[in-house]
Amino acid sequence: MDKDELKGFCKTEFEKLKGLASTLSSFCDEDKTAYELKDTAAMGAFLFSVYQGVERVLEQLLIFDALNPRQAEDGHSEIILQKAVELGIVPPELNASLAGYLAFREFFGRSYVTDLNAQKICGLARNCGQTVERLEKEVFEYIDTV
Image 1 (cartoon, rainbow, N blue to C red):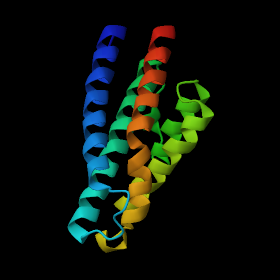
Image 2: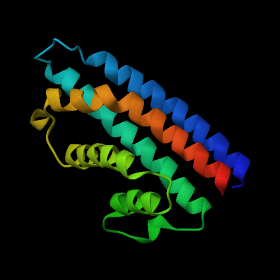
Image 3: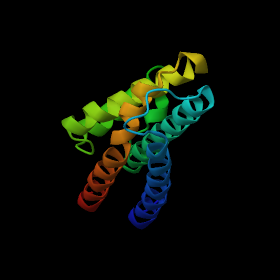
C-alpha cells in the first residue's frame, strides 16, 4: 500500500466512523435516565464498532510503517494503541480517551448485554464524535510527515 492508498483507506474508514458516532449520539438524550435493553445493546454494538474501526486505522498505519502488530497474540489491541502513542500518531491526551473506548470494547466482548450500563455508554457516546475527529486530524498529520 502506498501513501495515497493509505490516505484513501483512512478517509473511507473515518467516513464510516463519523457515521457510526453520529448514529450513536442520537441514542443518548441529555435528560433521559432509562433505556430499553434493546437500545442499550444497540449503543454497545455501535460503540464496539467505533473502536474496531479506530483499531483498523491504527493497525494499517503501523503496517505502513513496517511494524507488524499482528505478531503479538496477547494484548494485541493494547499493543496497537501503545505503538501508535510511541510513534506520535496518538498524543497522550487522545490516548487517555481512546483507552476508555478500548476498555469498553474489551468489556463488551466479554459481558452479557444485561450487564451494560446505558449511562456509561452515553458518557462515551457523547464524546465519540469529537474523539473520532481528533484522531482523524492526528492520523492525516502523521501520514503527511511519513
